[in-house]
Length: 375
Image 1 (cartoon, rainbow, N blue to C red):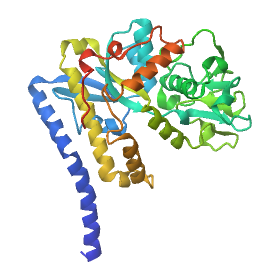
Image 2 (cartoon, rainbow, N blue to C red):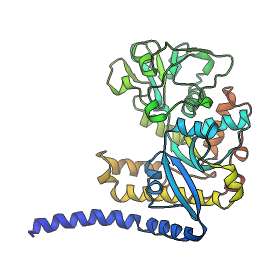
Image 3 (cartoon, helix red, strand yellow):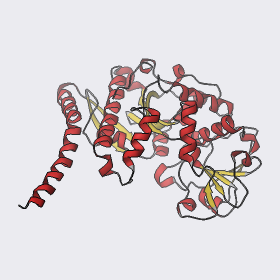
């Protein structure tokens, strides 16, 4: 073997070793949980997206203490419907936060219990798309305009409307809403649940033409703007007549966090209430299991993110995020997230969606209110 070959082999060993070393504590805990489960193991089904903060749990690198985990990957709309309607067979599921709020407040839904595990968080200034030929340059220019949406009461759309009201004074009743007949992101998000299609009284809301999804509405000029959690097809395709209301949304969103301390929450985790009642220890075990899986993702990002992620300035972005938001920027638990939660509760009630303004104590399992996220 030449000196160059030996050097190349050494580099490969370093990369491989970093993965193994980074995973070692979590692999050990997962094996211990499985070993303990041989005599006292509760079989649980976990459903979620296979994101970086869930991957270690999904792949079996980490586990949930005293449980044997079966992982089922699914889309959020389908996970919502599975829990709210039928068949409700999954023990633990990722769930849309606002749909859960509406089911809880408006329908008396109690079949699942919410835990403060926030699997999806997104700033939402990025999610406002506009026609560039309609003279829309500021949020205030949305007044009197036709704005398309896929559904109306999803978590992301509730956040967008609330932020526009809080930050720029643009209220929902100042906009003409056009709900698309189809959702351009359905292949990734699943079918829209009933709770994402609630419409409050007193607004100008119409349904878009049959056969056109939200991207079509914007591209064909049926609407002046579009609110959507996902980038519409026409934007991704580079249509020059389609842009973002906030082109430099990163700067706007960083300023929003610095001013408010809010990192908007989209999805949480729910556990079947009957299983939790029979196994009260399971609530903390599930919380700790998801914290451990997130910790594995943090370690991966720090050790090998620069290699496994294709973004050329991944390291700088990670450092900038930590400098602004702290090392545990994707935090779980109530303490660091109470303001974000209460803001969404306020938005939902003010927008005529939830019948009452919820509280943290209403919505989350009482024993989970003091769970600590210490990755």
